[in-house]
Length: 176
Image (cartoon, rainbow, N blue to C red; front, side, top):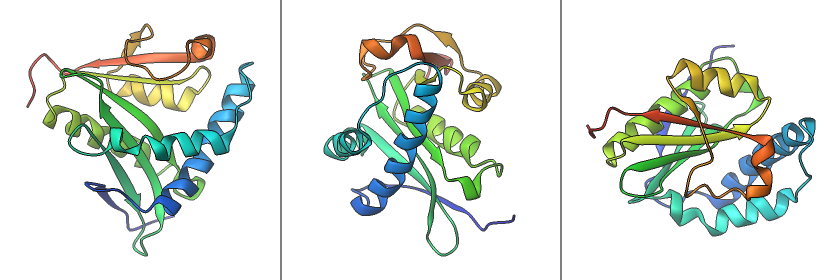
């Protein structure tokens, strides 16, 4: 399938209903993957509400959200980024809807957030994903991320550690 796709950063508070819809899909997938590796069930509605309540953490000047849309404006995917401190950025909530999978959107959403992290002064980028998420782990590997331990500033509950994998990308010490 060929889609005319545009990418843009939020820069301001996005449409909350639209964001709530895609986050609901995202957390549904995360819950399924988490349960597949023996992890706990959680409330998707509570996670979405908590994300919307903390949205300012992922908006300028300390973060941003990148969106992928088709030519009609339909939201195909998104990815969040935030600065943990002056040198470290964290990638969160990468999601591509089923109809747009296999088109390279996930890779592009990560690459755009890496560039955004450089622009924000990050020298290190951190991320986490559910253990067993082979497509996400392979993508991180292809982009140069290596394994790391749980990092300070990670917002996940420590009880989730047995079910998560942590990744790190060194940007070479100097911001762009």
